[in-house]
Image (tube, rainbow, N blue to C red; front, side, top):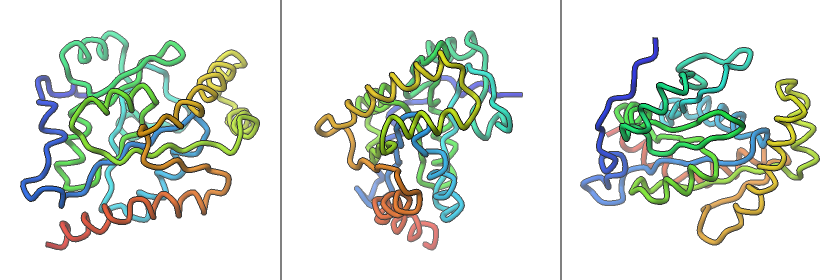
Length: 219
């Protein structure tokens, strides 16, 4: 049974700068269209550096896909439950897409931080803009496919989309791929046309934070 995120967690506590200034590892915000390969890159990151990174599990009101587990891939909740917790101020960011709510709860981020790990958040562009208004200070990375045609092929291969939902995802991806160029929105844009190269770029971008986390875990 899913426990409701703790009400009243202070947003400032999430992004508070460590007492020794900038020495603590920063969280990582990953964004990009569905099918761009974020999940695959994330899985490899967590497999390679499992003791350093922790994935912030998002909430959603959509139904689970085959193989997805509650509490691991997402917290699958009712719209009523999620709207109640949003109203209570329990979410850092939330958005609605294709008729479903998605969001990152404060409790999910705190759970990762409590393990002294670098918190990874997978959010959409609206979520990125919302996090920019907080003092979380993450590294912002956008993952995009080489083209919309390639993205459409990947989404069709999943066999999880209707023609209507596919059209919505492609339209959203087109907007995202334009918006991500906005000055100062992202620290890095990775074009995922080759998984190994894309992962290398991601790992390289996070190398300083990985070192910080390693020092913390060994101290």
